[in-house]
Image (tube, rainbow, N blue to C red):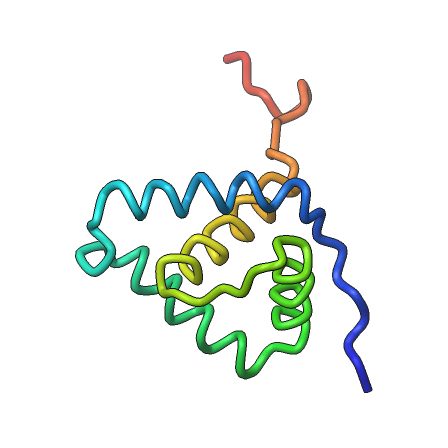
Length: 102
């Protein structure tokens, strides 16, 4: 059974991916960054074990007409996807009733 298509806008994902990739490429701090190493590990684990994640990777590959073939690209993909997920979560803003005017 194929997983249901996950709604990730590739037009939104691509520029965020490019930003992360460029940053990793420019700084050369790949292996010094815990965040980078964790993102690569996450990509590897989810690619093997998470059909939904694999589906998003496949959609992105098709969109770009290019495979994710390096650790730097893998890390950039995970970071970009994470950024988009965070952007979807509305920020908790207290209502007037929750504010204390003491």
